[in-house]
Length: 159
Image 1 (cartoon, helix red, strand yellow):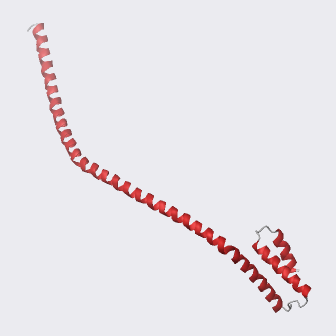
Image 2 (image 1 turned 120 degrees about the vertical axis):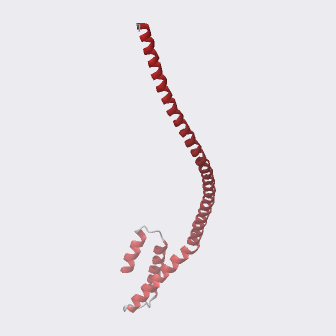
């Protein structure tokens, strides 16, 4: 056997081993491709219903958000109406109620003085002084709480 024949034999064996290895790789690659095809088919079968369900869920969520927007607008209107109503009630009843409270306070004060032994003044000057104090109490009760006039009236009433 000559060197050329030996080199040819080595090349032929090398090519045979290479072709065998490539054949094994191709067989394994074909198995992987078949499994990938099956996997893609299974994912496709499951993904389509999931996407349909997701689309339905998104549509339902949008409908619910529209309803919530309507409810929020109605609640906002109701709150504005309640605020207006409370302002109206405060404006119409607040002033007279404060005056009634101040008058009742003056009457209670006069009754407590009378029960404690102090009598209602009989002379005109004393009655005028008592009437002035009651008017001052009414004004003080209806005036904003600043402490100035109310404090002076309280000191005058207490004597």
